[in-house]
Image 1 (cartoon, rainbow, N blue to C red):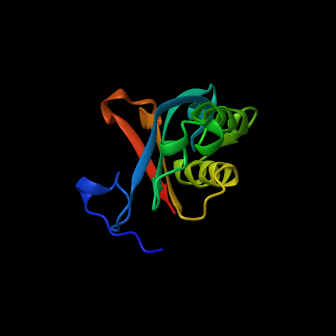
Image 2: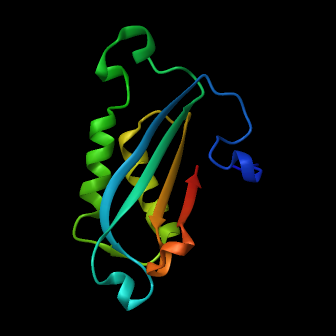
Length: 137
């Protein structure tokens, strides 16, 4: 699927109509990530945002039953468990791997999943702010 985005819409879905959107914001996952040795000495708290874009509204909108909706807790816990005891070099890789974990939990093929991974202070320099990568598919 081609993704069309401008700098101000990178956090939004690909350009098409969606009936609903579920956002999980600022899931905090401690992980060892970085390219340089000094970056990898201790885990950093990485912020993960997940957005599910629904072509058709989830059944939970009508039924009020968790069985008909994505379980926020289950998704968050799966991401945290996946990253435990692993180390990574690149945000891009982490975003794609976390996307795969979520894709395995969401059984609706018409859902587009966006995963944004943010690392504070790249290279240990607070002046650099944060670096982030978003994987959408």
